[in-house]
Image 1 (cartoon, rainbow, N blue to C red):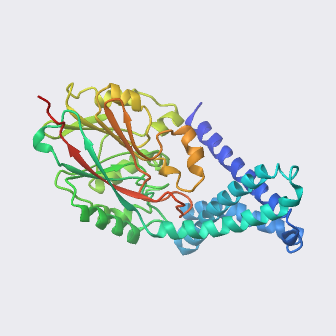
Image 2: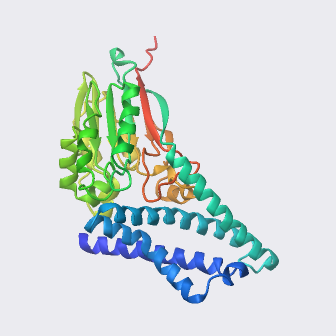
Length: 379
């Protein structure tokens, strides 16, 4: 299947799910007599159409026109996306509890009214939690093969910033300052630095260039770099002073190797392969200390088998909005936190920014600070 066909199928699937979510929420909302008697049928269709159009229209306006009006429409649509998801999730729970109105018919209307009210409240909470910004998460990792002289080496990891029309200069400047305050020896950017287009991010390059560390700033592409255009995204990485690792490795300190792969999710979606993990780790000496950067937490067993001692990923956002984390775990079982895959440690960050809804519900964003430890010698 060609790239154009795959992309068209992806868009069709997304719009179909988007439509079904709206139909489900509206059908349940207007089964509540108080709501049904308030809004006449014509206005219901107008409201349905406006809400359905909000996010797609905002994205189109942001791409072709830009400006405050486009940003406003896109922001409204993104917020509505979060409200819609929470509303549908809670309504489904209420429907399951009442047997879709058949087991406990007298409780159906109160349950649906209550869950819609709760969805509104949780949407406000999620928006406020997102405004708090990322928390700092600390990990100590004993890295196999790390020379003793590098014990205590620190690295900051940021991921999934999704810079663009909704997350811009002021937000980015705060994140850069937070990373600088950690004084890491090296900085890793594990993909999705760009949201959907490079154009809105290009003016942010001077801010990104302030992201510095004594041993450099390294990154890998995420799936959104592919969506935004890989060549343009890589040019932006270079302009920002981020050394992109593309199925390759290098030695950042004597005895400490760093490898990186282009995003595995995008490659799967586009039908690309090329054995990226094997290619990235193939030149590293056996037993040497190695960190692998991979935007998506996939091929983890392969990475461990091929000698990576630590793998750093993002992509999942930890689910971002409860209860979406339970759905995301189906495709990405290593969703957030630390995992031990044989001799390899895997750390999956929830990401530093947000995608879609500017919301975080019980799943805060993160900046990761890693402290590497040399293996303890046994006599």
